Image (cartoon, rainbow, N blue to C red; front, side, top):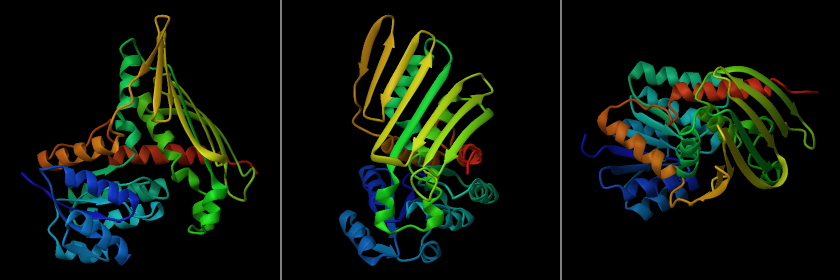
Length: 316
């Protein structure tokens, strides 16, 4: 397949980012955009010279012969928009979360299996060059022994926007902090053996404090710490191995300690989204299966199941 025909569904900031990356590749044809908001689809279509523009994904699928779709609507609609693409036999890259439950994500996986197409979820920390490099340095000396993942944001700020339902706000595990659930599970490179968690509604009427200790079958131990009580966004990770530790301030800075020395890793020019878009496009072109470290739909179900197990630790 020389130049796959692809569409971007969802013309907001994330869909715009994917469209810009795809437009920079010379081996793909960006043939259509889709968004129910006319101003959004017109703006993105004008920006990249895409003539064919649709308000509805069903209309898009009926009119276009697509090799792949990049799906990036508001987060609670990802699965609803991706499902008809997969059922129509279109290889589909969808933004996170891949559903509002493990069951909804399983539905996407099963649809892709029925139609024989590929699905991939945009948990881009898996392919972020800084995280990849830090892992490689630790694994050069042996297995990863322990992991830490933290993600903190302001739920108050989300409330003030007035855009989301109470049900969505009470399940903000599915929003950004699920990046940390996914990348820690991916870095462990093992199945989950035990989960011990505490979840609270501390300052809001919504779940806003999360803590979990996760033991993996290979013995790796992970600490996950999240809250929505902060005034600012903070993301960080730790990767501990044999006489080596990597400390990452989100995806902006990484420091590795080993052999009595401190080594700061250079900040890469890309942030994981470029890498995952390139990887998925290459899989579409070659027919190769999406495999870890990329997040295929089997992997996505496992991450959603871990998140639901953590949420089961809700305390009154």
